[in-house]
Image (tube, rainbow, N blue to C red):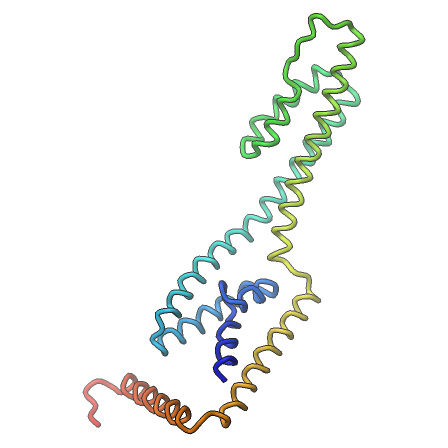
Length: 232
């Protein structure tokens, strides 16, 4: 019975409990319910651990809500980088190396938050061409141009994958949400029923302890709900 109760507690829909991780795949709005349930339990049982988990859950919930709001902004940012890449590729094919270099330098102000992309832009910096023939210079520039485009495309792809992996953690398609919801509900029902069925198997002494605890809690409820000035 104790194991079932512990597992039921663990299924409260709030992180860092397992129920919170499951709820994240369904909807973080379930965490509001989890916070309410955990607060009620912590007050009812006078559990310091319950209040500690509640505080952790609130902090985590706020962080994840913030992360979810950032997903749309991150996707827009990635789209901008992809458009930059397309422009760079187009200029590299149709214009001169100097034009490509000038355009790449103009992007620096828009890439202040992306250190890796800024480093990649500097691949087109000035190089020593004084002792090179015209053919050698063009060959070296072509090599640097391809190296730059390949590195920029790789960096944009890395950022895109990171954003989508982050989004996938918080966003689940409709079918998977329904499946997760019924699995979660099934776990709660099974553990609740097993806890109820195992009660008759408890030793008489444990039943007496639980009954005494229930009477004490009932007394507290009556005392707290009694109007001021009322007598026994």
